[in-house]
Image (cartoon, rainbow, N blue to C red; front, side, top):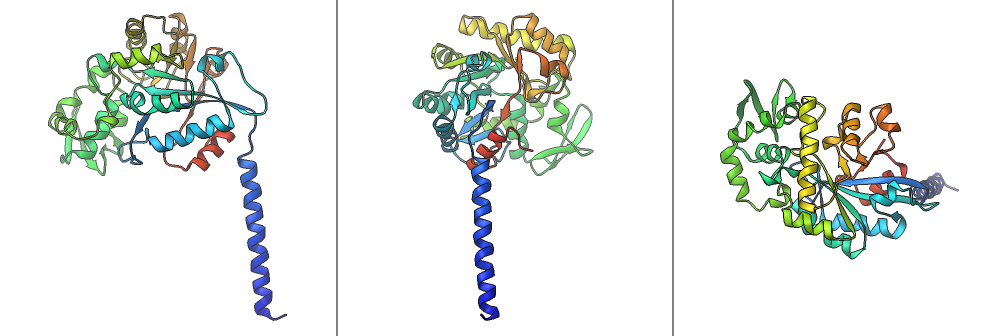
Length: 329
């Protein structure tokens, strides 16, 4: 046999072996197995664009995820998840949404109803005074503004791509360490920019649910409502009394809207402290949602659950593989 045919033969078997290994690996990655996951979504939009932040996925991608979950896994309500109504030999999943975007009502609800999938919506109650969250405001004005420099709290920030930076730290990161009374001072800096943005067809990226939409979700037997604080501040970096006020005000407002006792709470940004966990249980929250466990008390607390955040930048195939694995690492 000539060297040429030996090389061809070698490459053929190498390719065949590689394909076999890949298929075997894929079979392992996608093999259904027992597990417990609470998923967290944020925003849904009409397209594939994630140019402002990482919180949004398209309607089509969302439906593909839901279709796959309901076909292959056991999707249950958050209440049933806490009651451990799990099936053996399959992934058991509860679905949650954070922030309370109007796009959840517009796009997600019809799809969830189509597949009869339960979901829990954690609402930020600032909508009573404002139709947007401060973090979305920062993302949008930073992207669209023609300003190259701004001054906030005596510090100069320079625009770099879609962020404003000072000493390597973004304006958004700095604002996370402040209470909302301080954060909202930035609104006047970008007042004209925000007026322009509100005239653009971008409502899906910032508009929150109306009171009527929240009430409609609450009345739907498939869905349930929980609190996500009042202004979406980082509750771990503001004074404790102020953090407690953020929590209890949101609970009160939602109870007034829904005319029922609100017993679930999800921490903004997933940041929590043991003291705030204890406070949440003391005022009647029975289900407290985090992202990752960062303290022993949080991990061993019977009221808390960690959650798996959907990644908008990866394929459905990879998303399912990571979901089955239980982490992105």
